[in-house]
Length: 452
Image 1 (cartoon, rainbow, N blue to C red):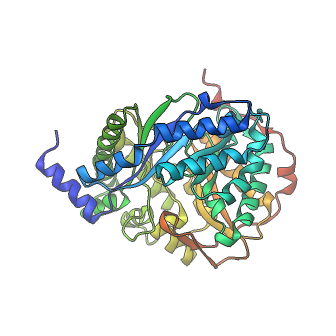
Image 2 (image 1 turned 90 degrees about the vertical axis):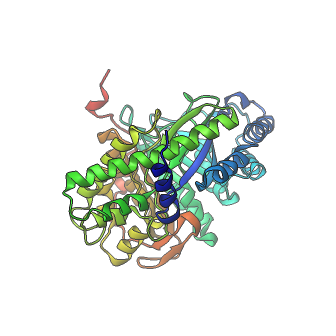
Image 3 (image 1 turned 135 degrees about the horizontal axis):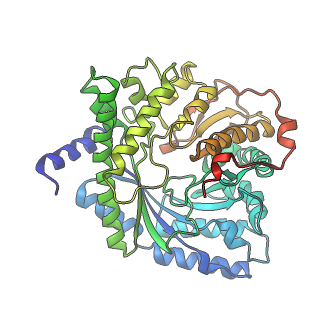
């Protein structure tokens, strides 16, 4: 039961501390849309999405009005398109991207994820064609998000795919250079990608998921920072306790919205992703939480330890508030999307090397980082390989979403707008990894993969 105090506290969180539901994401399986004729397959895809998701946006808007809780994005995730494309005799995979774009516009969602391939152990039919089409697909569309999973703790790392993805990221940025390289901001490379992630750009619906499902991603860094500001003198055990209690409250709101949306749409409730997802707005920053703990600036020595405490406490508190927690769940550190991260990067306190260390203890990885436009593709591949290695060894999800800022260099700015924000171009170590990346093959799975 919700008490009067609970209701008033939630209202304050929404009005003063940037609490929101970052996304309600409907997962839609496209497995029954497979057809040898690519045009027929695209027709089936369009029909299924526009039929199943036709009420998604209206339902979310009605929940917003009913409870006064902002739902920032309404999104769709679909079965990895490489799987659907595998059966088609035509290799014009971009047709699927154009179909998804058309469907997204028809139902009014902000993004649709799943222009994806899963190649952790090698390339199956449809995978190479999908990956080769990513730059063109993202240059021709506005709502499509793309992801490629190149490894896992169970499989090791597919270094052939890593090499290709470095080249793909670079080409995607080049094809959208006239739009601030926005294509690369909608492309993420994963290790240990979850099948139920509601957040973009990495959302897709795994083959083990239901035919249709509702997954919700909550937010609320401002709420956590505000709670800590009220207890400036507690020790770190007390800090962890405050974060846990606050994460419980935030996640409870997410559970409420998730169940309401699922019931109204007549589909199963999947998971709540209890990640602290920041925005460029002042007061809605994960970096500012770390600074509230006592750091002069995000990026200072101690940042990794503070982030580890935060991430663990968020998980412990959130998991008690929802019957089903999934996705990524923890604290996000996307540089251009976080006001505190942006400031720290501009001042030089936050470097890519420090960010890499932080990814060992946070929810995801090197996210929304602008790098010089002349960064060689093999260096981008090596960044992907390093981050995948952290995920593989630590049995956690890691990802890379870097944006080569074509025509720009260190210190220049790249502006995306909206939730994607803006930020400085950060320095990258360009000592050549070319021979290492060119070897190809697979980095074997670590010993901890043998758990059966």
